[in-house]
Amino acid sequence: MRMRCSRLRLHSGLLAAALLSIGATAGPPATAITLKEAYQDHFLVGAAINRTIATGTAVQADNVNRTLEQVMQDIALVKTQFNQIVDENDLKWALIHPRAGADGYDFAPADAFVEFGIKNDMYVVGHTLVWHGQTPNWVFQAAGAATQPPTAADPAAANAAPGGRRGVTGPLATREELLERMRDHIHTVVGRYKGKIKVWDVVNEALADGGPEVTATLRNSLWHQIIGPDFIAKAFQYAHEADPDAMLRYNDYSLENPAKRERLKALIKSLREQNVPVHAIGTQTHINVSTTYETMDETFRDLATIGLPIHITELDVNTAVRGQANTNADITGSGQRTEGGVVSAADQRQADAYAGLFRAIMKHKDAVKIVTFWGANDAVSWRASGRPLLFDGNNQPKPAFDAVIRVATEAGSNQD
Image (cartoon, rainbow, N blue to C red; front, side, top):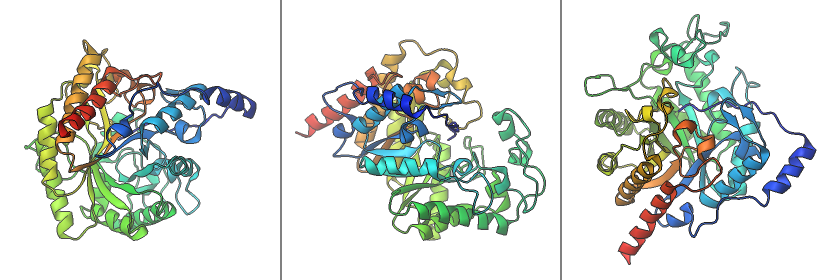
């Protein structure tokens, strides 16, 4: 899933020191129980963190604009509520490997993310190694071809380019060239964080969208066009070579759609028949306030038949009016789905949706091993206008937070 790319604008040392002293006493609201405490006997509870949180710096980029004092409060919230983190952006190819060649890597932001997790005794997850989005054009172009920017200023229009070329111009790389680039990238990145990053989203969003009328299993991405359908197996193979102890997962959205789950099951069955080391299923779970307990119960029941651990990887519940039609997390049109204002009685409807979701999770707790929110609070969410998370922009708990905690306490009472 696409998030924003950050361009750091650091404050001066004196200002940072002054605001740091302010933020040292600021923190999340005091609560009787935290998320990680409430679910500690069942699964890890995590959050995607952006570069501001990982580095403890104020940045202004795209739709992120947090003061250093606010960042310190965001950090305090993450440390208090969560025991697992995933990077929002900085391990994606465009950020960590923007240029070709051995000197084309930029490790500093990702290093900061991993160090943040280790320092705070958190379970660290890496996102993502192979994806059709946020991958530089040079990756797909023939050796020696001039790198061109996307042909459309609008990313959505670029995504819709003929053949799914996303603005890539000129001759494409050969299968051998692209496999070598993939192998180098995965070996370098996974190898650098071997033993530190415990789980990797190896391949992200490779399944075709749509209902049962869609006959294709895989998206027509450039990975698929150039390498062929075995690009997925190759990516998992390379990741396993780089860190044999890492848990490797396949991650996708809209798995609430039965037709897409069937494509997922076909893919995983094929990979396992080839002895490909795929260890977990990542279901993004970008849902809306209209999503019911019954839908999520059926989703988890069906996913559990695959026989692999289920990781909820990018959880949020959209309250925007235009976000109620579907749970599609593709970047095309995602901005529109956070417009139109929020639905009537949004806080209560969101709380009810979160409660239903977590009741379904607890019903399938033997299969669900990680639950990760896509962001720490509404202000830093990729769908900020849809107010999709448990904490508002001031890091105050919303009714949805209370609902999620209540599910855990009620489950504990029922076991007594």
